[in-house]
Image 1 (cartoon, one colour):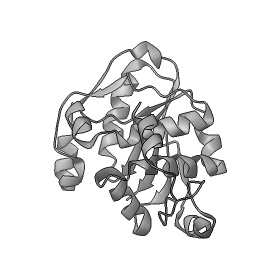
Image 2 (cartoon, one colour; image 1 turned 60 degrees about the horizontal axis):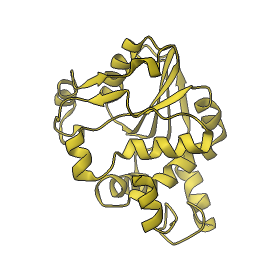
Image 3 (tube, rainbow, N blue to C red; image 1 turned 90 degrees about the vertical axis):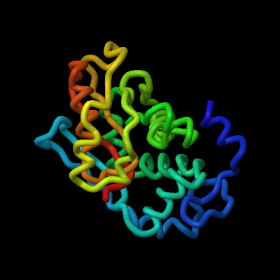
Amino acid sequence: MLKKIIDLCYPNVCGFCGTITKEVICTKCILRWKECKQTTIQKNLAKSYQEYAYLFPYTGLIRQRMIQYKFYGATYLYRFWGQMICQEKSLRQWIQAYDCIIPVPIHPKRKRKRGFNQAELVAKEIGSRLDIPVETNVLYKLVHNPPQSSLNKEKRKRNILQVYRLRNQYLIQGKKVLLLDDIYTTGNTVEACSRVIQQASVKKIGVLTISKD
């Protein structure tokens, strides 16, 4: 529903320069996008998830747009993030090897305050473009803890313990699950989520973020 409201209220604009355009990126900014991307896919990781991929380094213009997206009302940028990921051939093929996508959840109180879950909007855009189910009723956040971005490295690790839970495990049991978040900083969030997802006896877990700090 939120996605439909955003699409109705906001005209499509270029994710880089902000000018109104029929596409998520205007022809003048295509080179800028290509200069920013740093497609990376890592496999056989010694973590609770087996693969990790991201598209952008969290610097410069990408960092500016991500901050605008999460905190300053540029909600419509989910289209830009979703299309840029799907447009990258190696990432698209990698994503299509998974059975479903799970966005990292935020607590209901934070979602009410922000108005949306930034990872969920991007996950649904990718799912729609690649015809992959997006499961939003499996992993949930039980504890309304402080935002990770407000804490130092050591406090982030403690802050994320025991805050995620599973429900409706049958929806992902035996499946290859792709966990999606917006930014990878210390990796504590996706590690915590992956450990919880493992409890559903899934076949494989991969992690995808838009950017990496």
